Image (cartoon, rainbow, N blue to C red; front, side, top):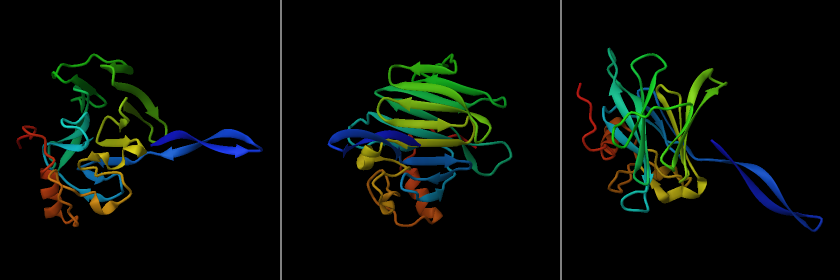
Amino acid sequence: MRNFAFIAVILFGLTVAIPFIEERPTCVVKGDPHHTTFDNVSYNFSGHCAYTMVEDAVHNPPLFSVTAENMFQSGEKNARVVGFTVTVNGRSLTARMGKNPGEVMFEDENNLKIQHSDDFWEGSDIHVIKETDDTRGEDRYLITTLVGVDVVWNGKYRIEISIEPSMGSAVVGMCGSANNDSKDDIKTRGGDVISSVDQPDIDNFANTWEVTNSCNTL
């Protein structure tokens, strides 16, 4: 995702603000599921629980987090990412695929269904907008927060999480940090850096980010 930012330059003795496009670090979770971290490390992990993709690494408890929910689909041997939860300052928005094609559901932190329109707020920190993605020919949902963590969801099996570039090393999770150093992206909740993307190592890494009591039985 992109931000519009401005840089001040001096032309002919005048200070002029010139706009430029600033790329936001983006983490992608898609399919069954394939992950790409903020610093572009790719790996696969198909656990059947919810996992922390990104959270605040500065405050305890964290001020914000995004978790992704994996679930086995009928007839498939690998779990897919089917939903996510955005939490900001104690308020949560959970989004999941519905039972019918194209159906989506939203819930709050009390597991109560949100009667939603194409543009709504959950509390004062989380904003949801439905729009059409012309490049893919499908609807998508933009979830923006006042803390600088945003999610783009296609209502199916693809989630894109972006953060402000200034957040850098102030985030942790399965999306890694955004410090332009891919070597430390695969880091456990305990802070151990995993240098391998071999599947047993990835499984051990991912399991440290499992959300307690979130696993789906087979």
